[in-house]
Image (cartoon, rainbow, N blue to C red; front, side, top):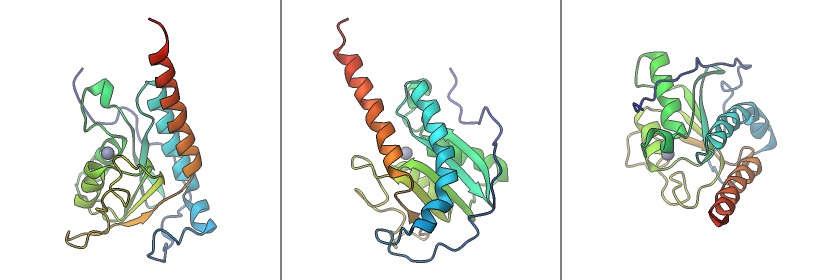
Length: 192
Ligand SMILES: [Zn+2]
C-alpha cells in the first residue's frame, strides 16, 4: 500500500460558528469552565468518531479534526499500522487535509481538535502550521507534548505559541483507550 495522507473522504459536517468566540483565560490547567467544554463538545464528538474508525481498524484509537470558521476542514484517524508509517497520526492526517483545503501550509485561524494530547511530532506540526488553538480530550503521559512531558505549544523560544484547551470529553477518550488496550492484552493472552 502506498503511504498517503490525502483524505479519502471529503470533509463533512457543518457546525454553528462557535470557534469565533474568544476562549479567554490563559492558565490552561485551571480555566476549563463548563461553557468552554460545551462549545467544543461537538467537535470532540467528531474526533471521537474518527477514533472509533481507528478502533475498528485495530489501530490505537486516536482521532482528530481541524476546524476553520466553525466548519470541519480536515479529519483523520491513526493509521500507523496500516500505512507502516510512524508519522501517520490522526493529527498529521487531519492537518494534511487542512493544507489541501487552503492549498497552503498556514493554518493561522484554525483549531486542531484531537482526542489525545498530541505527541511532539503533531504538536510540532501544529506549531509550524501556526495553528491558533489545540483542543484535546485526555492527557498522554507517555508521549504528550502539550504539558505532560514537554510543552511545545507554550514554549516561548519558538516563534509561535498555541492556545491549549485540555480535558474536553476526557473521560470518554480515556475510556475508549482503556477498552482498546484491554482488548489488545486479552487478545495476547488467548491461546494460539
Ligand atoms: Zn502525534
